[in-house]
Length: 458
Ligand code: UD1
Ligand code: CA
Figure 1 (cartoon, helix red, strand yellow):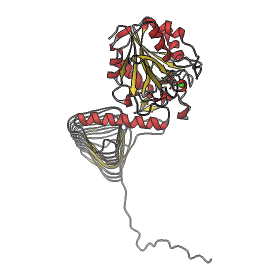
Figure 2: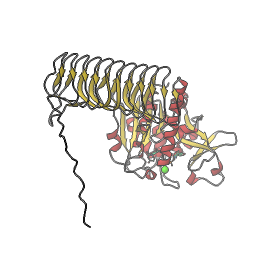
Figure 3: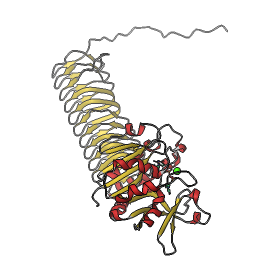
């Protein structure tokens, strides 16, 4: 690793074909902006500086990204890749090597970049690829003896040069000591009236700086995003890679094509994931976890042996071992479940703890609550946690039985071992060990008749 590595990420271009007001590099791939993937790949190289050149779309790029360790430099107007790099130059200080990346080429791999910088700061290194269809790319021009003599842009290329299938990916590593001199010599005398960074090749030749190239192993690494179609293609490639890594680690996927990971998914042994599940943020699944079809999990930890049944939505929750959640459950932020808890269909839980073996199996809302151990919450039980202005807590102690259709008007406490009868509205403390019900009576009106629909005249 050369001391003083600078990374410059070019991201000032417009991306017209995205047909969006959002700058291209902020469109999301796997739940994060395109450029965030590039910044992460750069970070893995432990560079001295990371510089992002932005321009199109005003201040949206620096505003959308965390600035830790990244310098943002504005390029206005955008006069080409050489001009873009020149804007970063004053911020680079003395670095042995400057690596240029593109903000819209998000799948670039750390290994490839490591190979790019391995040669150090005494040479110019180009990342190249051999493509079936090279159209649109700058072509690598070589001498008879095979050494690189230039890069010709498609718009400037002769018919003969356009047949060259070896292309410039745009990613290159430049010697720090030469950078300022070379950039000062670039001109815009070409078909696009742009300052081409690719024109450093003849300058390197003139200065007798060796020119090397690294050939990219998988073409998808150098694919750029110019349209929504390409964005969708790269998303699928990314997801396929992710699914492959999970399967290599022993995860069983019902269908690797129907899995979306938008963040980090860590899995223990013998995890099974059915189709159409989405994982967002940081998700951890312990050993023997099973996730049914069509579940969404965000920022959640799931304990060993727990089953998440189909159509369950979980956001920012901690779930213990051997629980059974869903189908059709919704766990909102602040849900913490101990072991062997059952949360069934159409149950919503928010900011609530459940002790071991407690159950809410059907149609309930438990919010801002502390539920003890071995509690059974009946169907239709609602914590009335909101008085229109403030939220209040409900405490349900161990071994409580709550009948169906109960309203718990918070703040309220249900004592240990208490039983609440069906249909009760609890607004005062319910004593431990006792049955609490509301006074209600059932009457029958003998001979009562249902109203009949009147016969209309018309
Ligand atoms: C460039 C290369 C070409 C290569 C191709 C790979 C040059 C002259 N050409 O082509 O050889 O095959 O990339 O995709 O370098 N950008 C700026 N400011 C600018 C212009 C561009 O920041 O003024 C950024 C863009 O946001 C983008 C990258 O540089 O991330 C490349 O720009 P783009 O216009 O896509 O590439 P080309 O110039 O067509
Ligand atoms: Ca261009």
